[in-house]
Length: 155
Image (cartoon, rainbow, N blue to C red; front, side, top):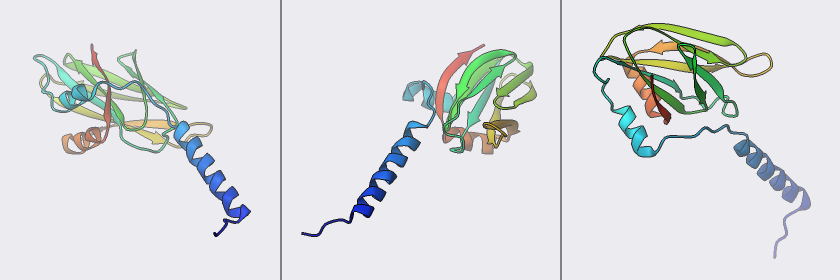
């Protein structure tokens, strides 16, 4: 019977510990049931409202949750590969991402339309930063489809 050298066993043990720590370090948030996620991705805007998808489809910064505010009210936190869906009356709205920095994006939304806001994870000095940007329907829906719904928020 062939024995594994002690050095190889220790290396394997350390690799296992490192992998477990990486998995434990991934931030998580409460997700909506899968059926709600599927419904949210195919929704049409309710009468008299706009739909805004705020998504974070990157794995970079997976160990970091980021606060998201909508018109000055806290929606909650995003984690890697998650999104919020907000139905809102038409007019000016502001989405804010709170990380090491504060990033704001103002939109003038119209009833019956969908908008896509990407929350990008950026390198910060002490912790992760973020940047918000509006994306096209094609790029935005592709990003949202890579994510899971955090919760449906009615405003």
